[in-house]
Image 1 (spheres, protein in one colour):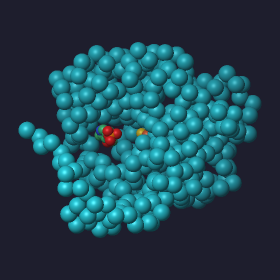
Image 2 (cartoon, rainbow, N blue to C red):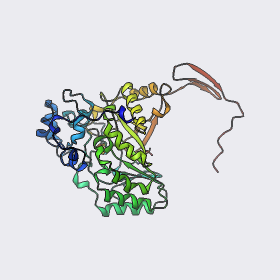
Image 3 (tube, rainbow, N blue to C red):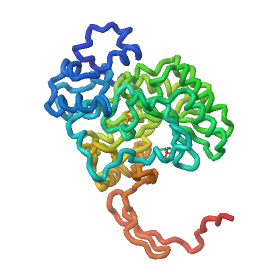
Image 4 (tube, helix red, strand yellow):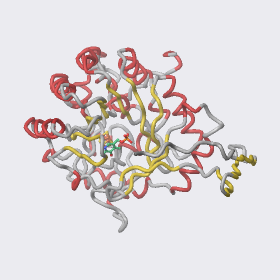
Length: 383
Ligand SMILES: *Cc1c(COP(=O)(O)O)cnc(C)c1O
Ligand code: SF4
């Protein structure tokens, strides 16, 4: 299967970098593109991009790994990789309906850096760093800002809270991107969490498979493996991100028994077409990554140029269900502002209903009638 995936083509700027450097994640981190001058060596910037890189430096800065930058089509401003990584002037436009904290996370932290919004699960803000700062990031109010870096004492307070809160059975290690931490620090976090008896599920939320696949090393995987089950949640948005390098990184996790799933964000003019979503999802399945969510672009400030209509998201889903393998169909979710949580939207297949008489339409638009027998059992009432 691996040979069905293309290796990324290095940008000419880095063609003489020795492979040991190129394949080293620390080299990739240290050589990230972070200024207008560096970016201009890669391709001709538009006026909008040139002004935005400087303007967003203090807000939500730019960083692009050489690996991810090499995926950019230098000739096209509408390249899906470029749109995710390079700021544009529209980022400075804030709409009245947008929020600084769209998911209402700040008020739902019982201790700093631990978001406990749903009854049985909690999300740990483990770092403010990411290899690439995605321009559509929902947490851009804190991500990339060194003032939000969680010290070890803060993480310990989060572990203590989880330890004394038996309802929590599922912990998401997130951020920022936790794979920005050292292997030692990551292992320490997972060891702590796994030592809590009522914690059953651990998740590692990372975009490194997409932005810095070199970070997934045999050593990292060996260190985390004792703490399985770990669900790796990643964030591929476009089939062009499914390279041989990404395939290899996913294979290291999958071979070691990690389960990987994907949370795509539906982004205007970037991946809002059924052919693109299909292509992405089937590539992911070949990489042993299960498509899990399509996120409707949320109400974070300055991402209006990425937002699609909810109707379009539902229409997209309608073109998937029935026509494609069920494995390739993620849930379409809207995360309600401010802090209502995720709701899943599905196309309405019920045409009419009266008592036990149902009329459905199937994925082809054909009508089917269903008469529920009176004997059909009701759910056993909860005592
Ligand atoms: C999305 C999210 C989760 C996990 O939700 P699932 O639907 O279980 O994947 C947990 N905590 C927070 C704060 C979230 O935003
Ligand atoms: S990797 Fe995740 S947390 Fe980091 S910038 Fe991208 S979306 Fe935000």
